[in-house]
Structures are given as C-alpha cells and as structure tokens.
Image (cartoon, rainbow, N blue to C red; front, top):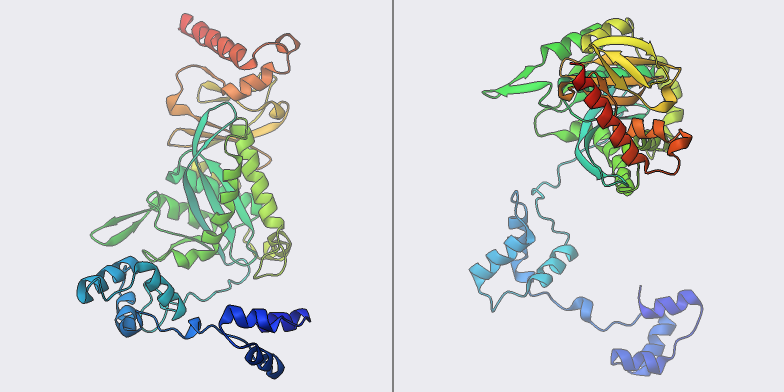
Length: 408
C-alpha cells in the first residue's frame, strides 16, 4: 500500500509539500495524484535487478535436486565474473521477487494432497526417538516416545519407552489398542529396524509382528522407502511432542515425566483439529464404534511377554521372575499388570497406564527399588521430614543391598 493510500484509509489529508520533498516531486503533482486517487512512487520498484539477465539460468539451476541459493550464486560468479554479478543478498531478493525456489522441478513442486481415511481403517504409528531431558535434581533421562494416531478421528496416543525394540513396539501397540477399545483394519508405519530388515534391496518382515497382528485381527503395513509423507498424520502428531521440551529441568523423576507425556496427549486430543473442525476426542466418539474388538487380550499379552496380575502391598514391591520390583506409592492396594518381555524389560501398568519400567537384565539383587519410588515412600515417614530424603534413600538402599549380599 502506498503512502497516499494509507492517508486515504486513515481519513486524513497529507501535507503535500512534505510528501513532495521526500519523493523529489512538485507539490502540485502530489496534489493532483491525491485528487485522482493515485499514489506516489520513488521509482525503486521499477529499478531493474542485476540478476535479471541471468534469470533463466537461475531458474534452471534452482530446479536441480539439492542445489542451494548459495551454490547458484557461486556458479554465476564463476561463469560470469565477480565484477558482473551482484552480491548474494541481491540474488535472494531476486529469487523471492520472481518466486524461484530451490529444489522445485520444472513442472512445479511435488504435490502431497490430503487423504482422508474411513472410520476404523487405519492407525499410523512411529517413534519420537532419542529424547534427552534432565530433571530438577540433575538426573538425565534418555528415552523414546511411541506415537500413534487414528486416521479418521486423529486421536493421538503417546507412550514412554526407554528402548524401541520389537518388544516395545508390540507392547505399545497393544497398550494403545486397549486404550482405544479395539484395533483398526491396518496399522501403518515406516520401515523401522525392529520390524523390518533389508537384504539385497528386498524387505523382510518380522514374522513375530505378523503373527501378533494376525491374532489381533489387524494388519501391519509399511510405507514405501523414503516416503514418510505416506503416514503424514502421525508425522504431524509428533509435532505435539515438541511441547515436552518446555519441561526440561522442570520435572521430578520418571513418574512425573510419564505423567507429563500423558497430559500432553490429553490436551492434544481436546484441541480442535483444523481438518475436522472438532477436537479428536469428540471425533473419536464416532470412530470407536468402527474399531475391531480386541478379542483374547490374554493371548495377545502372552505373545508380547509373560503376564501376571498382582495387588501391590505396602512395601510397593511386586514379584516377577524370582525378584521384587517397585511401583509408585499410589499403586498400594491396587491391582497392577506386569508384562515381562523377552528382551528383559518389565512394564508395569495400572488401569491401562504405564506406572513403572524396569530393566531386569541389569538387576543383580532380589529387591529392586527405583530410587524415585523409595524417596516417595520415605517422604511419608515423619522421622525423615527434616532430613535430606535423597541421602536417606541412598543410604537405606545401600543397606538393603549389603544385607542381600550377606545372605547369599
């Protein structure tokens, strides 16, 4: 918008002499432009660019895969000489003005049109990998988040996991299906190494994963290689996990980290979705009726690992494979489900939510308390109210370990 147009929009009359002085014009000319509804111009927009004579070359080079603006500038300098080619910022302005973008083929950008999925047909899943966060006590947590989204309602599910093995994938898929109340016809993912291997250009599927899917009444499908846009809905869902970064150095232990991820999931499902016009949680109320029943849940759990249900005693310890493993204080008196997977991971859940995660392959003692769980237990004891809870927990856990060693 020109200067005179801005005055017109504001409903005020400009000082013609002042405008004429700034634009190098006669004030009578400015007054005439004002009366005719025209605007003033200093002529800069009509000034030719030093790259105009190279525009065809620039467009041709920009269409080549992997070429950058800087590479195009270096090419022009090399071919035509530094004295004849303007500086790099002028090139970027020229390309922006004429809408020339790098990596755009001659027939235009590759389109990725939006596809809508019928109700109950597809679940897309993937990993948000190698996340590293630090809590308020300086403890570093390295983990992954399993991300899944229903294709029609866009309902999202996020699951915390320390590793991303085939055990983890199947356990998370089953956990998501239980939370959703059923399976979709297909489950789409990329060629993750835990489910797929390649030999001489040929893809080999995981037989274990296929057996699990068949028993569940679904089918695992894989994207074509180097085409992640095929599961673009889940790629979009992963963006919600960027919210997790705001909690770096501002959470206390693994339990709170898992709770934060669950809260991010809840909020993401309550936000209106642009394509749907309603929140995913609302759209899910319709899609859930199209999901396939889970069927024999116990059989599916046993295909993932050894399963047992236990009521948590006041010691906050549950038994698995001859050892005891801790859970959070809130689980006392409640029934939890233990899933011991072949890879050595023990997943403990309550009401369908993960509450504790242990690596049985690294445990040496019979009693295995997570330090955070033990600190939580001591914090409820009056005699520790004025002490350093962390120090007391470390000392008591050391004594427990020494007592076990003495009786071996």
